Image (cartoon, one colour):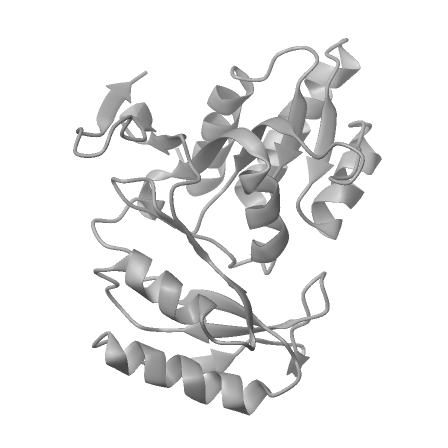
Length: 243
Protein backbone atom coordinates (compact mmCIF):
# COMPACT_ATOMS: atom_id res chain seq x y z
CA UNK A 1 0.00 0.00 0.00
CA UNK A 2 1.14 3.54 -0.64
CA UNK A 3 1.35 6.17 2.11
CA UNK A 4 -2.13 7.54 1.38
CA UNK A 5 -3.75 4.14 1.71
CA UNK A 6 -1.83 3.42 4.91
CA UNK A 7 -3.26 6.60 6.42
CA UNK A 8 -6.76 5.48 5.46
CA UNK A 9 -6.24 2.09 7.10
CA UNK A 10 -4.97 3.70 10.32
CA UNK A 11 -7.99 6.03 10.30
CA UNK A 12 -10.33 3.07 9.74
CA UNK A 13 -8.86 1.24 12.73
CA UNK A 14 -9.30 4.34 14.92
CA UNK A 15 -12.93 4.65 13.88
CA UNK A 16 -13.59 1.31 15.59
CA UNK A 17 -13.01 3.12 18.91
CA UNK A 18 -15.75 5.69 18.23
CA UNK A 19 -19.18 4.85 19.63
CA UNK A 20 -22.60 6.47 19.62
CA UNK A 21 -22.93 9.55 21.78
CA UNK A 22 -19.22 10.33 21.97
CA UNK A 23 -17.86 13.81 22.41
CA UNK A 24 -15.00 13.59 19.95
CA UNK A 25 -11.92 15.74 19.42
CA UNK A 26 -11.13 15.72 15.71
CA UNK A 27 -7.53 16.33 14.71
CA UNK A 28 -5.82 18.08 11.82
CA UNK A 29 -3.60 16.99 8.96
CA UNK A 30 -3.86 14.51 6.12
CA UNK A 31 -4.31 11.40 8.28
CA UNK A 32 -6.95 13.11 10.41
CA UNK A 33 -8.73 14.20 7.24
CA UNK A 34 -8.94 10.55 6.17
CA UNK A 35 -10.54 9.87 9.55
CA UNK A 36 -13.06 12.69 9.06
CA UNK A 37 -14.17 11.25 5.71
CA UNK A 38 -14.74 7.80 7.23
CA UNK A 39 -16.47 9.35 10.24
CA UNK A 40 -18.78 11.30 7.95
CA UNK A 41 -19.91 8.05 6.33
CA UNK A 42 -20.79 6.65 9.76
CA UNK A 43 -22.70 9.82 10.67
CA UNK A 44 -24.61 9.65 7.38
CA UNK A 45 -25.61 6.09 8.32
CA UNK A 46 -26.95 7.06 11.73
CA UNK A 47 -24.03 7.35 14.16
CA UNK A 48 -24.55 10.16 16.66
CA UNK A 49 -21.46 12.06 17.79
CA UNK A 50 -20.49 15.66 18.49
CA UNK A 51 -17.10 16.80 17.26
CA UNK A 52 -14.71 19.50 18.41
CA UNK A 53 -12.26 20.33 15.59
CA UNK A 54 -8.63 21.28 16.25
CA UNK A 55 -8.30 23.67 13.30
CA UNK A 56 -10.36 25.85 11.00
CA UNK A 57 -9.43 23.53 8.13
CA UNK A 58 -10.80 20.51 9.97
CA UNK A 59 -13.93 22.44 10.92
CA UNK A 60 -14.51 23.38 7.29
CA UNK A 61 -14.15 19.77 6.14
CA UNK A 62 -16.50 18.53 8.86
CA UNK A 63 -19.15 21.07 7.91
CA UNK A 64 -18.77 20.15 4.25
CA UNK A 65 -19.26 16.44 5.02
CA UNK A 66 -22.06 16.86 7.56
CA UNK A 67 -20.18 15.98 10.76
CA UNK A 68 -21.92 17.81 13.64
CA UNK A 69 -19.65 20.21 15.52
CA UNK A 70 -19.43 21.97 18.84
CA UNK A 71 -16.80 24.19 20.44
CA UNK A 72 -14.59 23.42 23.39
CA UNK A 73 -16.40 26.14 25.35
CA UNK A 74 -19.74 24.44 24.69
CA UNK A 75 -18.31 20.93 25.17
CA UNK A 76 -15.30 21.32 27.47
CA UNK A 77 -14.88 17.65 28.37
CA UNK A 78 -14.31 15.14 25.57
CA UNK A 79 -14.34 11.36 25.56
CA UNK A 80 -11.76 10.78 22.85
CA UNK A 81 -9.50 12.69 20.46
CA UNK A 82 -8.25 11.13 17.25
CA UNK A 83 -5.34 12.96 15.64
CA UNK A 84 -2.24 12.40 13.56
CA UNK A 85 1.40 13.06 14.41
CA UNK A 86 4.62 14.02 12.66
CA UNK A 87 6.68 11.67 14.84
CA UNK A 88 5.85 9.05 17.47
CA UNK A 89 8.28 7.26 19.78
CA UNK A 90 7.82 4.04 21.75
CA UNK A 91 6.64 5.97 24.84
CA UNK A 92 3.98 7.71 22.72
CA UNK A 93 5.64 11.06 23.04
CA UNK A 94 4.85 12.96 19.87
CA UNK A 95 6.02 15.77 17.67
CA UNK A 96 3.03 17.59 16.19
CA UNK A 97 2.51 20.90 14.47
CA UNK A 98 3.65 20.27 10.93
CA UNK A 99 0.28 21.57 9.78
CA UNK A 100 0.42 24.54 12.12
CA UNK A 101 -2.43 23.58 14.49
CA UNK A 102 -0.38 22.41 17.48
CA UNK A 103 -1.84 24.81 20.08
CA UNK A 104 -5.47 23.87 19.46
CA UNK A 105 -4.50 20.22 19.04
CA UNK A 106 -2.84 20.19 22.46
CA UNK A 107 -5.73 21.99 24.16
CA UNK A 108 -8.24 19.53 22.71
CA UNK A 109 -6.09 16.51 23.55
CA UNK A 110 -5.69 17.69 27.15
CA UNK A 111 -9.48 18.07 27.46
CA UNK A 112 -10.02 14.46 26.36
CA UNK A 113 -10.27 11.30 28.39
CA UNK A 114 -8.18 9.50 25.76
CA UNK A 115 -6.12 10.40 22.72
CA UNK A 116 -5.54 7.96 19.89
CA UNK A 117 -2.81 8.81 17.38
CA UNK A 118 -3.12 7.56 13.81
CA UNK A 119 -0.10 7.44 11.53
CA UNK A 120 1.77 5.41 8.95
CA UNK A 121 4.84 3.45 9.95
CA UNK A 122 7.28 6.10 8.69
CA UNK A 123 6.26 8.29 11.65
CA UNK A 124 7.57 5.84 14.26
CA UNK A 125 11.08 6.74 15.48
CA UNK A 126 13.47 5.60 18.18
CA UNK A 127 14.22 9.17 19.26
CA UNK A 128 12.21 12.25 18.38
CA UNK A 129 13.76 15.09 16.47
CA UNK A 130 14.27 14.06 12.87
CA UNK A 131 11.19 16.17 12.10
CA UNK A 132 11.81 19.84 13.00
CA UNK A 133 10.05 20.79 16.23
CA UNK A 134 7.33 23.42 15.66
CA UNK A 135 7.25 26.14 18.32
CA UNK A 136 4.29 28.53 18.28
CA UNK A 137 5.37 32.01 19.34
CA UNK A 138 3.91 35.46 19.89
CA UNK A 139 4.55 37.88 17.05
CA UNK A 140 5.74 40.52 19.52
CA UNK A 141 9.43 40.17 20.32
CA UNK A 142 9.97 37.48 17.71
CA UNK A 143 13.72 37.93 17.46
CA UNK A 144 14.17 37.96 21.24
CA UNK A 145 12.15 34.77 21.53
CA UNK A 146 14.19 33.13 18.78
CA UNK A 147 17.43 33.99 20.59
CA UNK A 148 16.04 32.63 23.88
CA UNK A 149 15.04 29.36 22.21
CA UNK A 150 18.55 28.98 20.80
CA UNK A 151 20.10 29.62 24.21
CA UNK A 152 17.78 27.13 25.92
CA UNK A 153 18.69 24.53 23.32
CA UNK A 154 22.41 25.06 23.84
CA UNK A 155 21.93 24.54 27.59
CA UNK A 156 20.57 21.09 26.72
CA UNK A 157 23.37 20.37 24.21
CA UNK A 158 20.98 20.79 21.30
CA UNK A 159 21.81 22.80 18.22
CA UNK A 160 20.43 23.45 14.78
CA UNK A 161 18.63 26.07 12.75
CA UNK A 162 15.56 27.76 14.18
CA UNK A 163 13.65 29.22 11.25
CA UNK A 164 10.46 31.19 10.84
CA UNK A 165 7.86 29.17 8.94
CA UNK A 166 6.89 30.85 5.67
CA UNK A 167 4.09 30.29 3.18
CA UNK A 168 3.73 32.04 -0.18
CA UNK A 169 6.54 34.43 0.76
CA UNK A 170 4.87 35.51 4.00
CA UNK A 171 5.22 34.39 7.60
CA UNK A 172 2.80 31.54 8.32
CA UNK A 173 0.08 32.61 10.77
CA UNK A 174 -1.69 30.03 12.95
CA UNK A 175 -5.43 29.97 13.62
CA UNK A 176 -4.61 31.71 16.90
CA UNK A 177 -2.77 34.52 15.13
CA UNK A 178 0.76 33.46 16.08
CA UNK A 179 3.95 32.62 14.20
CA UNK A 180 5.75 29.27 14.15
CA UNK A 181 9.47 28.71 14.53
CA UNK A 182 10.67 25.32 13.27
CA UNK A 183 13.62 24.04 15.32
CA UNK A 184 15.88 21.51 13.58
CA UNK A 185 17.54 20.15 16.70
CA UNK A 186 18.02 16.61 15.44
CA UNK A 187 17.77 13.98 18.19
CA UNK A 188 15.99 15.16 21.35
CA UNK A 189 17.03 12.69 24.07
CA UNK A 190 15.26 14.51 26.94
CA UNK A 191 11.90 15.76 25.71
CA UNK A 192 10.69 16.71 29.18
CA UNK A 193 13.68 18.97 29.82
CA UNK A 194 13.23 20.69 26.47
CA UNK A 195 9.51 21.11 27.10
CA UNK A 196 10.16 22.77 30.44
CA UNK A 197 12.85 25.03 29.00
CA UNK A 198 10.61 26.21 26.16
CA UNK A 199 7.65 26.84 28.45
CA UNK A 200 9.88 29.07 30.58
CA UNK A 201 10.37 31.50 27.63
CA UNK A 202 7.70 34.23 27.78
CA UNK A 203 7.35 34.54 24.00
CA UNK A 204 6.67 30.84 23.50
CA UNK A 205 2.93 30.19 23.30
CA UNK A 206 3.23 26.39 22.97
CA UNK A 207 5.46 23.75 21.40
CA UNK A 208 4.86 20.59 19.44
CA UNK A 209 6.12 18.06 22.00
CA UNK A 210 3.09 16.11 23.22
CA UNK A 211 4.15 14.31 26.38
CA UNK A 212 1.82 12.00 28.30
CA UNK A 213 -1.23 12.84 26.20
CA UNK A 214 -1.55 9.89 23.83
CA UNK A 215 -3.00 6.68 25.25
CA UNK A 216 -2.53 4.62 22.09
CA UNK A 217 -1.09 4.90 18.59
CA UNK A 218 -2.50 3.05 15.61
CA UNK A 219 0.32 2.57 13.12
CA UNK A 220 -0.34 1.27 9.62
CA UNK A 221 2.52 -0.43 7.79
CA UNK A 222 3.25 -3.09 5.24
CA UNK A 223 2.63 -5.81 7.84
CA UNK A 224 -0.78 -4.46 8.80
CA UNK A 225 -1.98 -2.44 11.77
CA UNK A 226 0.11 -2.17 14.92
CA UNK A 227 -1.41 -0.73 18.08
CA UNK A 228 1.05 0.73 20.58
CA UNK A 229 -0.32 1.44 24.06
CA UNK A 230 1.04 3.91 26.55
CA UNK A 231 2.63 2.36 29.61
CA UNK A 232 0.05 2.08 32.38
CA UNK A 233 2.46 2.48 35.29
CA UNK A 234 5.83 4.19 35.75
CA UNK A 235 8.51 1.69 34.84
CA UNK A 236 6.14 -0.69 33.07
CA UNK A 237 6.85 -1.74 29.51
CA UNK A 238 4.93 -0.41 26.54
CA UNK A 239 2.51 -2.95 25.07
CA UNK A 240 2.55 -3.79 21.37
CA UNK A 241 -0.33 -5.50 19.61
CA UNK A 242 -0.62 -6.38 15.97
CA UNK A 243 -4.08 -6.41 14.45
